[in-house]
Structure formats: structure tokens, C-alpha cells
Image (spheres, rainbow, N blue to C red):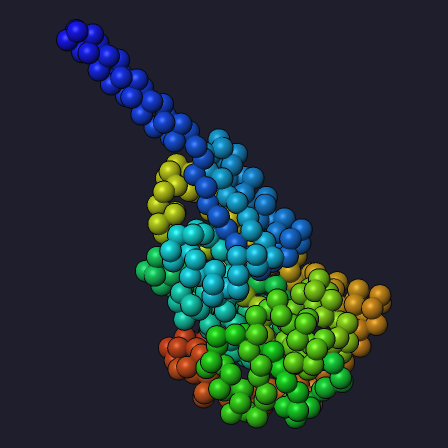
Length: 346
């Protein structure tokens, strides 16, 4: 009897150890899942570039790392995305400066400076100079930058024709929910901000909650904002800048042997997103004009000067609140340096 019990115990122990080893081996063979979320629409060029990056990661790792893309804001707005990354519900995101600033406020110097940049060459120059420092600051906050990108210029879309700053002061204008500092500055400048999530813009324009919205033309085309807001002011208000980031916790789980190739694929995705974003902005305007009757209002030099003066009046309030003072000053210094080297070219 004793021998029977002993054999039974040993058999059970062996079976248990076998099951444990089997489970461990199965767990080791499972791919490392990295969930990346973005507001970029499903099947957009941005989404396709991210899918291509995911495919490269899968190939490089031999299927051991699986990058799963969630487009169209299905994981919530950008602030919600950052919160979910902080608790490891998702591990990565393609965010605009709005979301990135919830991690590190210094990134606002790339975008939240209305009328500061005269052309996209200046946007590229400032990015080239600031991004290495910003990457270190983001790393200190627990995030690895995968790539930087932009989607060209933000323009103003409105229900009725509006050209001057005073015209827009009469309108209720979309602004990002949660950015109380921006709302306060807009109110001080006698504008009427209405805080909402991006996904609410079309409905808010349709039901009269807002009268105008700054956005990139591609977004206006994709979400049919040209319908309730058929007027576009052709003013280069500010670039829409963003980055792909992954939490350091998730990045550290990726085997070091894959990281260089992963970053190379990410940099390619960022370049594609920037190039397509800029081109698609121009193409979207032509499509909305030709197919949907969008009325585009050019901005002559005197009107541009009026807008620039209006923007410059709020710079002292932006400096040190929306944009950290040291970053604001550095952007201005670098722009002066760049323009001097270019012979003061505008």
C-alpha cells in the first residue's frame, strides 16, 4: 500500500512538473504583444504606415514581437491614451503634441506657437534642433520615442465666411478638452473656446455647439467637416506635430537584438507619415473644393500681418504657461539663427 501511494505521488508530481514545464514553454513561445493606439483614421495613409512598421517588427523578430495597431481613437482621446499607457493597458501611441505634453510639456515648442513658423522648412529646422533634447526628457519620464512626424498646417474651417481675427472672435471655436491654459489665453484674447474631443467636432458643428474649428485639411475631408463648415481660411496657423512613443517598461521587454531594426522601421514610418501628411493636406483641399464645394479664402499679406500681430500679442501669455519659458526662448533664438543664415528669407 505504501509503495502504491508513493508511486501515485511520484506520478502526480511528474505530471504536474510536466504540465508546468509545458505551460512555461508555451508562454515563452507566445509573441510579446505591444498595443499601439492613435487617432489616425482606419485605412488612412498614417494607419497603413503603422501597419507596415508592425509587419517589419514581426519579420525582424521572427514573430516574437507583435505590434497591434488600434486606429481611429477607439482607445479614447489622447489624454486617455497616455493614462492607459501609464498603467500598461496599452504600451505605445502615435500622439500629437496635445497628448505628448501630458508626458513632457517641453514638446509644446514644436506646435503650440501660432504663427511662429513661416514655412515647413522652419518647422523641420526647429524639430531637428529640439528633438534630441526632447527625446531625453521623454525618456526620463519613462517613454522611448520611436519616430517624429507632422501632418502639415492647421487651417481654420467655419460655418460662415470668416477672415480676420475679429471675425473669428464672434464665433465659438473648438479647442482641445482638458487644456484649460489654452482656453484661458483664448478668452483673454476675446475668442470663444469650446473644449471638446476631436471626435466631437463634426457633431458640434452640425448642432450649433461650435461655429469653427482649427484642424488639418485631411481630417476635415475624412470626417466630412467641410459639410457643416464649408469655409476654409488658407492661413498657416501652426503645424500639427506628433510622435510615436512606447513606454520604457514595454521597450525594455523587447530583446536588444531587435531594437536597432525596430527603430529603423519606425523612422521610415515617421518619414512616410510626414511626407504623406503634407501632400494629403494639399490634395484634401483640392478634393473638398472640386467635389464638395469648399470655399477657400486666401490670405493676402496685409491679412497675414494682422493675424501675426494678433498671435504675437498672446506670446507673453503662452510663454511660461502653455510653452515652458526656456523652450519658448530657444525656439525664438533658433528661428532667428535660421533666418539670419537664410538672409532673412520669409
